[in-house]
Length: 350
Image (cartoon, rainbow, N blue to C red; front, side, top):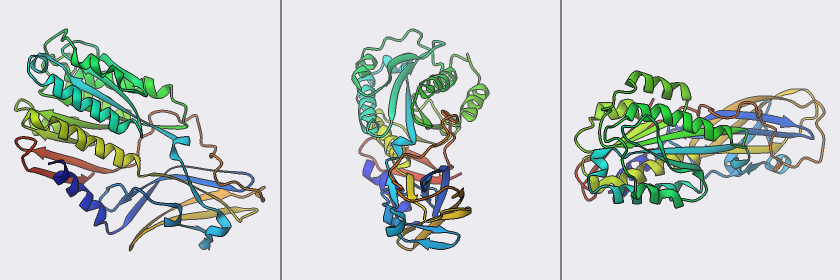
């Protein structure tokens, strides 16, 4: 099943008619370093990953700068940005009293394992209580997942809206402690129902998510939660499943999505041949017949020889956390009956 709906997403990437480059940050420094941090998507808003330095052309004032002259290279983007994903899991009475807990815990563990090579991942649980319950705070290993397996519900109700507001605060705090100049956050919520506690209104939760700038994905299981509600929660997309047997596939669909968008970030650096004056640099990506470009202006005053293009760029560290990522495609997936059933997928660009 996973292969079916993920293939539908991949097909849109392969069939792109053009590329969209979106600048995230840029910097220049002596002796003659110019660096641009950006994303590459196709015309449908789907991520374009796996590009190499030779897939880009660099122009200064409209003239092509040769690769031999520029020594252009792609620097590991981790020197510029950190990505954080917070998973909040519904552990209200309807979940803990069912037979779903082992499957949810296994799926959350696989989700964490898939992401940890690309992101910092934290896991929290919610029930009807006011506060979230820490399962695995942001760290490098997934050892804390056993707390989810043995979780005991404090309040059997469902404080879904309150959990979303709390999640923004938890993610804010984790990202404030990051080291990279730029930090991006994602919230993933798993739930089997709607908010019953009424501690926080949907409007308050929605406003908190919107102000945060974080990507928000929702996974809904069962008949209690309706698709419009899941759509409202999942600002960046959602997966709706009717049978608990498909929980693992739902988590995998979201993890694949998050990883794909992490890989669309590129930090391209080169040594400029300019030695004075203000210049316009154009970065053009070329993938088969598809192309896309962005422009950036820099001042070459004081530029000279002995440039190392692998030198980390001096990005503005005062921007810090809560950087709103570039607009991207939206995922909507419905898994009809069970893990062996056919799946339908729709991908839209907002």
